[in-house]
Length: 195
Image (cartoon, rainbow, N blue to C red; front, side, top):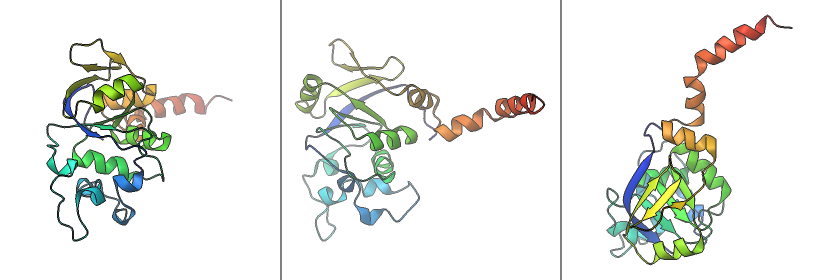
């Protein structure tokens, strides 16, 4: 992860289905790689392509503009199912930077945050407003911890503090530790001689 996440203003892509699981986000047959590159083509593959591999014309992810629609608004219980880091990889490679729902699976949330994808949980009223406005423009301010829709009062959201810090700095947890290697070595040298 190298791109910092501080603020994002984007149009939304809405997938209102509830309980979208990780196998729908990226089918198991695409889990044979450890590379993140190219997984965006497999994101929601079975929703985007027919049995012959031809694109489904009216599939939302085939008609969306990933450069303009970087925020996915999904139905309740998003990313349930099996743990697979490929799910946030696929969404990121497709072009998403944030996912908004009323509830997002814990293990997906952890994987997403470690890879630079911001999961945001909102209340039912905010969620209904977002679902009713596909392609609407919203702003996310991670530093302030707020989501803004039009001229309405910003809506606060929570992000685990260490993950928030890593996103803002543009590092993953391992990168954060590596950046502090000199301080860690200095501490170890100071404490080596202590009983």
